Length: 221
Image (cartoon, rainbow, N blue to C red; front, side, top):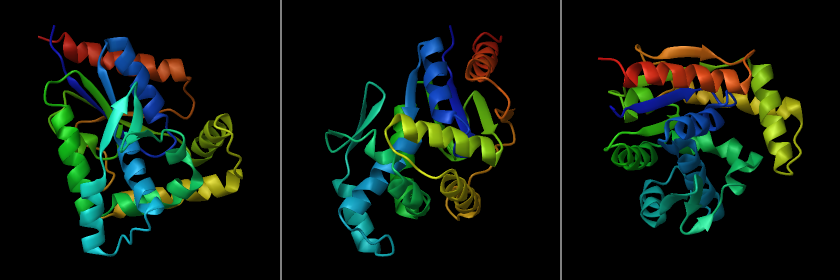
């Protein structure tokens, strides 16, 4: 049976990470949350007062950041930071840190190494365009801003974090603007990506649809 790489891109709050995780489980593939890598890097910058405008500080910081996944949860220098990287403080900074050329180059290099042997599901914003432009299946996920804000509020509440819906929506729209217009690896739909609007889909339906697309690529002659 052929093994493929699956790239899931799209806006914040479309369910990329949770969907990618379940797709990987259904196919017995490896799941990598690329967004968690950028969030963990952002958390390191915040904790260590790294000035993102200072090139030397950024370069030195990247040398001190060691990331790995344990049971699909991100570790930053040996510490599980899966919950801390989802706070609003990180939300407000992650798009700015992710737009830094050196940060993207380092993360993309690590991500490409992870996908060398295929059988990978990775979600993010530039997976199908930059990280794995040759991925056998590319999916671009969308949803309305209102739906995405409600989903993010619920996700935060489940982690014990209470945030106003209006603040969450404003943050999502700001991130859309930054991600879509940044110079380095902007958020765009790959020409050969299949678009999936999740606004009115159940979680099970969106997972099932992508698994169906994946199997058609896996078993095609």
